Length: 87
Image (cartoon, rainbow, N blue to C red; front, top):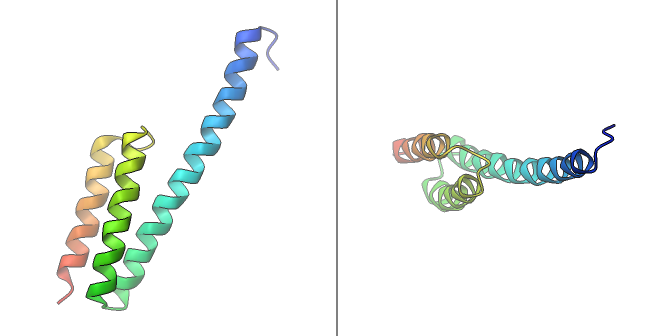
């Protein structure tokens, strides 16, 4: 454990931020899984509605700095392509 007051504070802040990041990443993963489930079921309408929700979650995570901007863009692009491939 650190002895310096500022180092102790950083440890606490890092833990708090890690918890926040973990919960946001989990929400993104869940949204992506819902889209993939709808794609696997070949349900275009459900996939489209879930895609909108997933894109929103991914964009929020990118805005907060949890995902890099290009990582978020890549995830959105791949999901959109997969949904558009459903006939």
